[in-house]
Image (cartoon, rainbow, N blue to C red):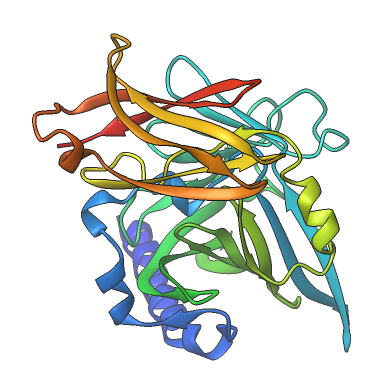
Length: 324
């Protein structure tokens, strides 16, 4: 019992010490601002959007492996799929993860890294501040690795309102009864963007400087120029609505490889038309349409609905969850 109390006291002290230092290392991109909550429907938060690993999403990070020599690298999800039990599988670069997903997110919003390989529990997106979980079942250098959710606050990133979640990655070391925490890394996720900050102890941080999320470009992307960016939207793609689930407003984005007429329609599970969101001519590129289902039909019940994008050559659909 004394040993457990000692561990708890050490953990509380280290968390408080870490929180006291957070403002000292946050980059300029991360802006704390309580006013951001005025622009976020906190009753309609989709935890998955703290880690939006959907097909076509693209992130560019900046770090320093050598002083005064910035290094840029990208991460991109090539495709995603949803299993029958609701688990989202996200596939990264094929050359690194051939024929297996890089991430999975289950219906409890638990993020697993390399679910068919290493199977590490990385993030819990719908948990409480102070929660701790084991990363893996196997030991690393005779020690267990853990994650802890340490803080949450509103602010802006790329000038957009968001909510930040901060995690620490650490190992508990027991040396002849003396227990202490060895801090390995700090990770910050931002709602609508995903991972925006990662710093391993003793190394320069990796900071998100640009992204393409659900077809929308944010920040500056140095590894691709404008013509290269167009290749990211060279095929028809209907993105997951955001937020989802939702209780009034939601946004639907889609990519058009070439200009033309489109028809965006929402159906119920019986195939009955609920709303024709748009039937119009659109230029090539990425477009976002806002939908207010409560205004369209005040008698709609909560449940799953299908939204379908029709062009002259293709039809593609996705599911959305409406909570009245």
